[in-house]
Each structure stands twice: as structure tokens, then as C-alpha cells.
Length: 115
Image (cartoon, rainbow, N blue to C red; front, side, top):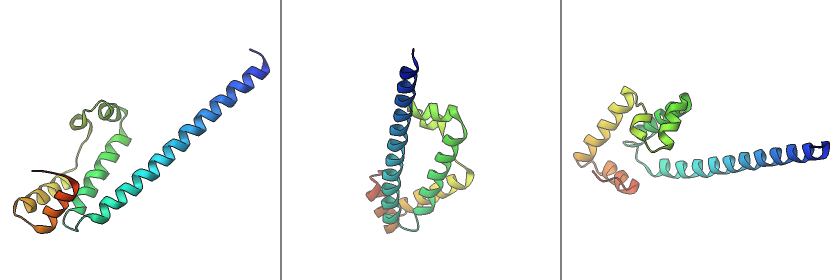
């Protein structure tokens, strides 16, 4: 391979990496916009539980390659570790839903969650 071919190969690699970074940043912004819309629509009764679950999921996936691999393969239950605080918050939201708390029931409907 001559110098020109090396330069062109390097340029192709750099361009490809730039396109991947651009796609990642675009997806990140889109995801953040969607997340903001979801958070804005939820009541104060449900929001802490949703935020805690989101935090635990991101923390777990970021902390371990194995968790990321498991999540990519669809094994979410094997990939995500929820904290005791998160589990307590989720249990409370479910209890509120079962008790018929209007705000929580409306949140579940908005999220498309059926219990």
C-alpha cells in the first residue's frame, strides 16, 4: 500500500468514526427529548420511581460490559440490578396504582403499562 492509499484509508476511518459519533449524538439528543417529555407528563407520585429505575439501569449498563451484552441480547432481567431504594419506590407506586390513586393510574395509562 502506498502513502496515498494509507492516507485515503486513514481518512475513510476518520470519516466513518465521525459519522458514528454524529449518529450517537443525534440519538442521544432524540432520547433526551423523549425522556424529558415522559418525565414532564408524569405525576410527582410516579416520577421518583421512574427516575430511580432509569438511574439504576444506566448505572448498571455503564458499569459492566457483561450487563451491556446481556441487555443487547434481550436479557434485561439478568442485566439490570435495582437498588433497594428503587425497589421500594416501585413497590409504592404499584401499591398506589392498586389502591386506585388517580394520578398514578393516569401515569400508568400514559405509559401504556397494564397491571
